[in-house]
Length: 428
Image (cartoon, rainbow, N blue to C red; front, side, top):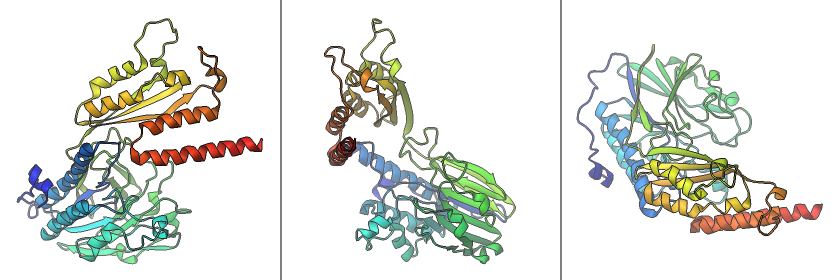
């Protein structure tokens, strides 16, 4: 048993509804986008480790629930890991959870996701000896693994047929990685065996049309499946397309700010030939996520003679009510400002405040824009700043505030941008 289990008392319950479920119903626990091993937000090592423990505990809550309920199927719909080369700690943790599921007689199915599948680029760099991490579990019989589509070629979906208490269940898996040309579903062929399934299921990891993405799969082109159980999107949702019921698991922890209203968790399902008997989203223990958006006109009044606190202090005053140790905050700054005004913002002080008073603070200044050069004139010196000088000044400030891992990448990017600007200037 892992240290996370011992620490949090998440031992599997002995109770089970195996003998009490309605006749003709297949029970399923669906989880996705667990992102084990995720490390971002520039957290200090202690917080990074705490966040990774939370990721593991959230996945364990899903497996513990499945065992306690005695479900028929445990389905992981992609991105179990946040990387194609997870650390040994996360690998061992998952192995222990899968062993518990197998010992409980629960069939496990999983997909390769966007994050935990080696890309063509990685393979070209000589990483052929590092296959997708889920493959090793499949080889040992701990789960059935469906690899993603990586080549632009005709594809036949493998149909895994299972008979569960006399119910014929057909399961296929489809994971679509970025960069594919054309419409993947146009090349898709489903094995005929799926037509004989009483409960036909497609496990999917891909963007879905209609769920807040620019381009997604049109699932009306997959009429063979009564049930589509999906990952990729980090918010839980349920919708119907044609004859198909689509259930998106959502992530088990916040790993970005794409779904601020999302309640992390997994899904407990009862599936029958005539439809979904129940679909319950089960919340897990998770950090809170909040967003704060501040416009530049809130920091600098239209009338400069109006007394007002310094811009940095205004931001800190707005942050204080939101901060606590169980909260991740995204501060979004937007609007126009001069270079002089930008340097009045002490972003390092704001970052330090966030590190001390909340779990994580991310500053998004992508919506800030400097006023045109002719408007960004220093009132004291009458000095104009060229776009090249602006880039150097801003880049140096970001590099100084970055951690060691980011400094090198930012420095390279700065040099490439300056070279490109010089080449453009030379062509004029």
